[in-house]
Amino acid sequence: MSWHILGAGSLGSLWAVRLARSGLPVQLILRDQSRLEAYHRAGGLTLVEQGRPQLHPIAAQTADHPAPIQRLLLACKAYDAEAAVARLAPRLTADAELILLQNGLGSQAAVAAQVPQARCILASSTEGAFREDDFRVVFAGHGHTWLGDPLDLSPPSWLDDLERSGIVHDWSLDILSRLWRKLALNCAINPLTVLHDCRNGGLSEHPAEITTLCAELGELLETCGQPAAAADLHDEVLRVIQATAANYSSMHQDVRQGRRTEIAYLLGHACAAAQRHGLALPHLRALHTRLVKHLNAHGLPSQ
Ligand code: NAD
Ligand code: KPL
Image (tube, rainbow, N blue to C red; front, side, top):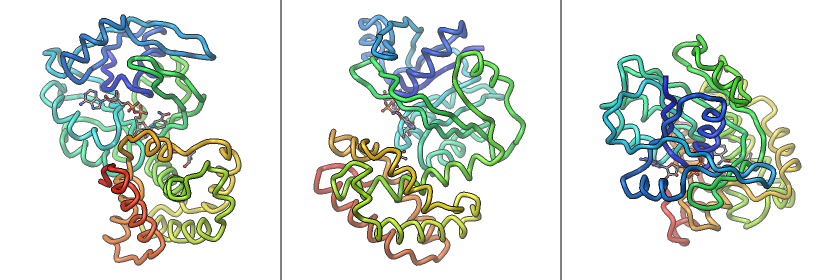
């Protein structure tokens, strides 16, 4: 059974290399013929670990390839997920399984609606990787990946493949709670680092803003039926700010590098959920408005 992996970016490459080097069949799915040709010219994926680069000539194809897909790791950004899966839908088998690696919430439901016959397994990861160049990825931080399926709590058989490949993971019986918790952390930290143009640690100079946001995010999580994700949120936000004080948040890095952010699946999703529940969260809404303005002023999409 091949692992099809869409997206030869940071996390997609990290998964592809580890699965392939443990002897499992892997097929990368690239955007189009010109990307496939560029990939062949590069000779494969290069993964840099502890400063040491190694080239891995993993098989690759485009979405138009005729072979059926039974297992697909979707490793693109949240805003690309729905369109990417729409192109692959005709290739999915009746018992297809998709692993959705997207951060935030909203894209997973959009993908699942595209492919109602498939099992969609949601993932939340604390691993860190970044693209140094085309088809060259640096493994920047070891972490953990939680996987789960809110509609079917039975673990899939291929978790053994992850074990064998050294992909540290757990099967989660409440993956939505994990995704909501991560979303809340990202909403409390990332937008403020962009607006104050600071590292995560710089937020310790804005304790009142953090406290107010955490209170509203906690209220939202409770209202959305996620009380476990709300528990001690403020404490954890402060802990993460301290532990990652020297880092720039992922959203700050995206904005600085002129890349589109996943705002719609983080703060945008939180504000939309609050509105659906008739919940007034004035500070969260004001933060969203400020961030949208900031992104637009920098020529970046705010959706
Ligand atoms: P990335 O931008 O590095 O890689 C995404 C890749 O998908 C790109 O190469 C892009 O060209 C490709 N892609 C997009 N649409 C495609 C299509 N239709 N066909 C083929 N390829 C397509 O992104 P990433 O950093 O790997 O992030 C993926 C998700 O994982 C995001 O939601 C991100 O927030 C989350 N995440 C990333 C990290 C990290 O350290 N990089 C950590 C935790 C979570
Ligand atoms: O996940 C993060 C990010 O930068 O996206 C942290 C470090 C938790 C900050 O929100």
